[in-house]
Amino acid sequence: MPHAELKFSDDLALDAAAILADIEAVISRHDGGAGACKGRAYPSSQFHHTHVLLTLSLLSKPHRDAAFTQALMGDVEAAVKAKLPQSCHFSLSLTYSDAYYVTNYHEVLA
Image (cartoon, rainbow, N blue to C red; front, side, top):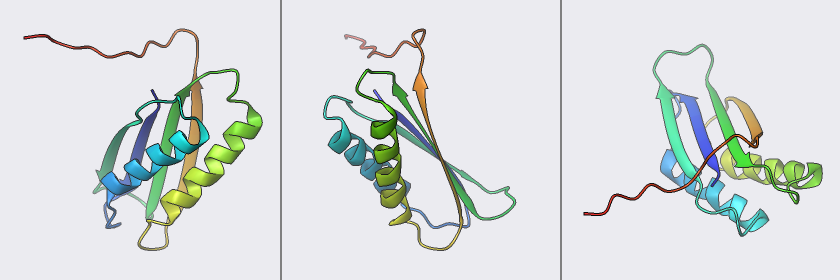
């Protein structure tokens, strides 16, 4: 269950939902078993310099090695930048969760 957090200065007219959907699609192309990517977008009205910061978090898996990570980061960067409507600073961070991270689905039955 990957997570994506998109933080950006609100002078960028972004379609955050489309960007988050593209990120999920890129992750799925690289790793079909990754599952849904939970995405959140945080526009900020208080900022210094126009910018985007994307943080991706994935579970550690044996096949997610350095080559996988570099390829995924390159494709995610290209997908996000294709949707940026103007020049801006861009940062991307990909982290892997350690053994003490829990992720699952909580369902409430009526």
